[in-house]
Image (cartoon, rainbow, N blue to C red; front, side, top):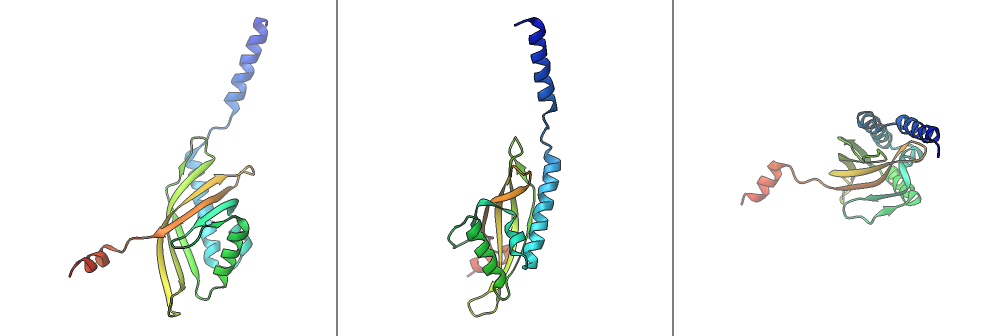
Length: 166
């Protein structure tokens, strides 16, 4: 290989690596939090099953306290549709502080949820959960939730103290 060929190859390599877009965590964080907030608003409205389901990846899983794992888009669609048809059902969540993989293709976010459901006696029951959502940037560039895990939040400090006092 001639010296001019080596220089040409090196220049091409520099141009290619120099033009590779760098992952900007601040911008990605803003975009992901905005997408998650839009999703929460749609879910809170409780009307558009297809739009709400579109925020999950095809291979997504939902893990709720005391419930079987809901796996895949069809099962998630059925779960969302049934939830929206449940009298008194309401959900809203707030996520924060996304953490990204080095390449910017995966992220997780902690969050808090509030869900209203009919209680055992038919009266509304409000459930507070905390969770982690794991997101993946799909080939089309959109962030989609792949894992949505929630567990019940611990009781408020006053309630815990009242239970501990004999």
